[in-house]
Image 1 (cartoon, one colour):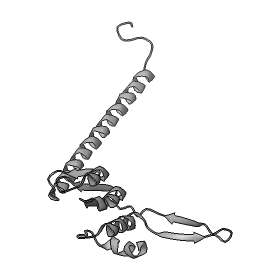
Image 2 (cartoon, one colour; image 1 turned 45 degrees about the vertical axis):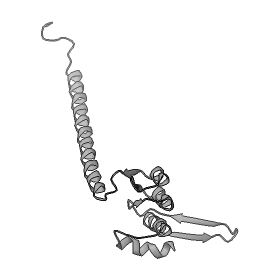
Image 3 (cartoon, rainbow, N blue to C red; image 1 turned 180 degrees about the vertical axis):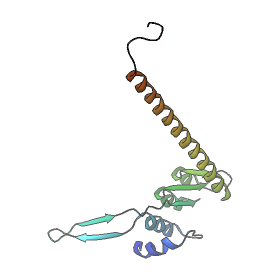
Image 4 (cartoon, helix red, strand yellow; image 1 turned 120 degrees about the horizontal axis):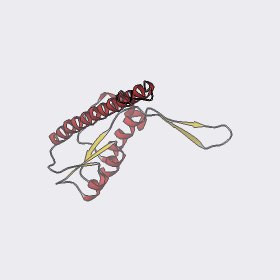
Length: 150
């Protein structure tokens, strides 16, 4: 069933009204490029080859049956009001108001925080670089005496 979802999952961006087994198949199809079995001639054991597609898969759910797909996804989101305790434990993020527009707000806030941290780290690295460069230049030009001692 995974190979059937592989091509379809690449083109569809949003699914709704899916049952838990389909949710799990969608997550696996988006996270795996291909899943093939190679049987060696000497033994009957199967070797599985799995490669990542590079997609970030987000799965939402509210029931016990959704918890497997929520756990397998890169980002699992559970409903806070209507969700069960099992789905809340499996999720990475819990929507307290059960409103999907909260996800967009959280992404915007997260991007802002990420960019601020990135800019801070960049600034600190530049300051450290120029401090080290200044120290190296000052040590290279050190003559042994300062201007007052001469």
